[in-house]
Length: 75
Length: 156
Image 1 (cartoon, chains in turn blue, green):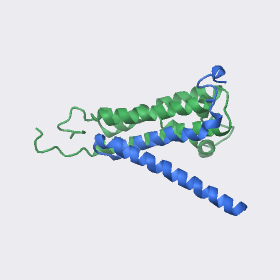
Image 2: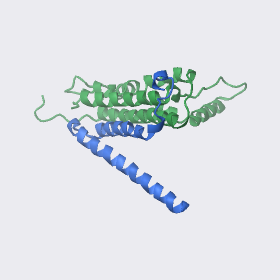
Image 3: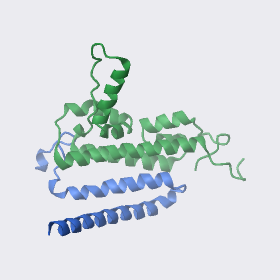
């Protein structure tokens, strides 16, 4: 499938791994946000890493909460 | 890193900084002499936008068409119609904020085949988030240009 893929014209053939596409988006968002917020750019790597981890854990927590809610409601 | 207007060879007026940051992400910070911040933000925004095009195909950038004026249509009605067309495609508001790259992708995107389902959504999300982050950068760079820090006591 990857051999017949035309970049930028056809969508990336990652149908089975699409949740992983969340990671680069959260990483980019963390880096830009902390680059804007921090006065000293030397603090950006550490603070962006912390924000990235916070976002990922919050999303995993929200996913678990929704999964539990669905389990409770359905059962 | 930024300098006061009097002491800085990098001083640039606020509108120039805002427009430069919109056209080329991060370039407003470069005008203010904040090289690391400008390169970090600029490269990250462009990479996110290009990742969105790669994930969903370039058709994820789909601008409103803005058809010709209708017969007997008043200026107010035409404005309302254009606002309505923009609101029917809200992701383009974010994509437009990435500047030249977003406008160019909007010109060639609709001619390409459309992707569907999750990958289209994720590609659209990447490109729109990149534009919204650039909007944050435009506001921040403009604020830094308008309020440069006071010179330090040791500065000439």
